[in-house]
Length: 463
Image (cartoon, rainbow, N blue to C red; front, side, top):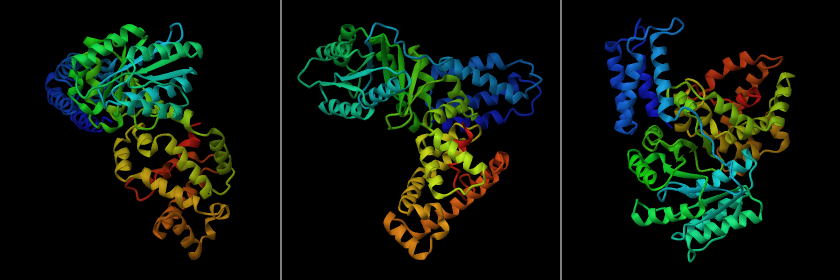
């Protein structure tokens, strides 16, 4: 997300490097580039105008801080304004109500409401320790009811059944009564969407809102619809007392204009971002972290939180102990590290959150590294325990058996062995605590450097 905007802004901000003072003249061209970058990212024109005017007011005439060069000073101002546009700070859900707290999800068809219901249920269950009931009041799409039932089973949330011949208000009230009997903390109500905004849709959802009196009314919007996000957001904001926004499909939008426009248009905070199709791909929206990503400064806090949640700490500790003692890094260890990395969203997601690694993240995605890692896992799975522990056993006949069993080519296996060898060398350098040496060795293994990014590098070191 934000990759094209990030690239454009980075190039624009380079042009003021070396200036002793920020003046209207030497930032005029840069601001013009910033304006163009924002417009090309599908940010709404009124938002762009206000943003550029505010940056100019703050930047012109400012003496350069002694600790910063002018470019850094200007970047700091741009970052501060980006944070302000997106809402200053993360705003969590307000669930301080007599149980069950009702959350109403609203939005157009195809925005990702039903998937977001399941993602939010999983988020509340795992991170907030809430007991959650989900229900679909979408009587026009029986498939949506079935979809929510399937997703609810996947995230282990309590699903309240409904059918197309029922009234949406009766469905929601039934779910709330069921939640009370089950002593549930939260009820999430999925509502009907339409392919476009119409009076019937708005009247129905207004009646539903009045009947269930939700503590949170979340507007679910597809990040990829660009400028249309503004009109849709306005219409829903006028019809309903929205309390927040969930921005879906954010991982598929290289521009990011919706994130910068929706807050300004609705005056309501973006509370969550959907970053993929998996049910755990929902992140709280932190404006300061997103601004940092946009400006190529990474998002280390989110990366650390991902690691805390997804890394198997026992395995990480065992590997760390093993390599520090100088024991051999085998193919079983490599497979564990690949799996850990996939749990954190894959190499592209991890690199995107590291400062200055935006281009690396793009390269990883273009090289389909996620697909490559899966192939590597399948090959390792096709080996015997002895072969995983000692790759030197792999002669020609063993290699043929493994590639036939995994549906791969001998070249794929040889590539895996070469990459394992590189990682094993790096791990050897960690013996006795030589982490710095290992980190220096990583640079040649990034995309474009002829090798595999080290899946094992981050997990053990992020403890």
